[in-house]
Structures are given as C-alpha cells and as structure tokens.
Length: 208
Image (cartoon, rainbow, N blue to C red; front, side, top):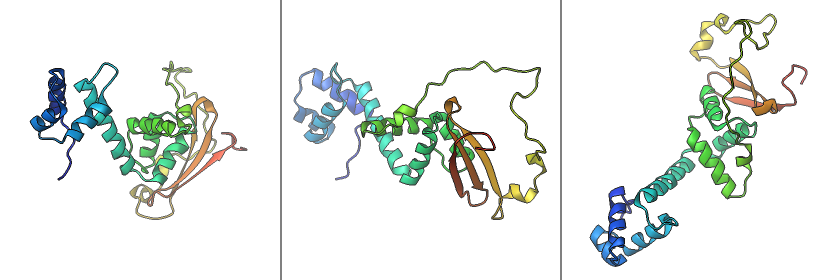
C-alpha cells in the first residue's frame, strides 16, 4: 500500500477525536489509517501544549520542504552555498548571487534551513549568518561614491556575440565582498558553459 501524508483536515479530525478520549485504534479506523500512523503523528507533531492541528501541519510541511531541498541539490551545489555563506553573505545575497551567475536557483528559506540543519549535525554555518540592518543610503552631490576604474571599457561596448552566449571563451569576472568587508572572493564565469572559477583573496586591492 502506498503511503500518503496526513492532510490538514485529517489533523483536525485527530485533534477533535483525541479530545473526546477516543482510542487510537478507533481514530485510525475512522480515518482509514493505520494505528501506527496516528501514533507517529501524535508523537512527532505534538507540542508542549498538546496536539495542535495547525502547528502539527506547519511542522510536517517544514519537514517535507527540508527533504525536498535535500533531494533537489547535490553536494557540489550545497558546497557553493557554503562558500558564499562563509564569506558572510546573507542567505538572500547568496540566493541572488547564484542566480546572477546562472549557477543555481535556490530560495533564501532553503538556505536558512540548510544552515540550521547543518547546526543540528554539529556544523558551524549558523555562525556565519548575520542580521541585516537597514542602512541609510548616502549621496555625495549626486555622484557615485564607489571607486571608478581608470580606462574602464563599459559593458555596453563589448561585441554582440558575447551577449548571445553562443561561443566558448568569453569570461566574466567579478569580485564578491563579504559582510563587514572581511572576506573577498574573485569569480570568473565562462558565459556559455557557466563553468566557474572562484578563489579567495587576502584583500580587495589590486595588489592583494
């Protein structure tokens, strides 16, 4: 027999029937489930306040999401996520960065769940998560405050064939700076194959 997860409606039925003092075997018969399924549900999803169907549904959904995430990405892809987290990028920044590089489409929530699952296994990824504080954007007479490269050739001047991504050999370089400007990573992405090279730097300066 194929197992199917309990529905939210079934969880409310379990809640109502247990409050009436009905035995597990009778609840199982009423729902067309096995007694072990009902017993496992009450054991895994009950809280300190007893069995709450809404909370039980949330806990079950979270576990299913974590299992799907674990199956969806392979170890090398999670290694990429870890690499950026250890640069003190926020999960949102990691998600955006990997999407920008066209390497991985992963939600911020999935990254948070992975970090906390790593903690439960004795890992240290949670220590790299940082709180995002709103910063007041500063302006200097309407001019860009960041440095400008000398003799810079704008991206708008590159050949059209580069944008088409039809040939091998066109590389795109970038520098990723972590939170607190502590970690620096240089990345090179081959535009057609999306083959990526990444290497940590000692500083963000050209001599680093």
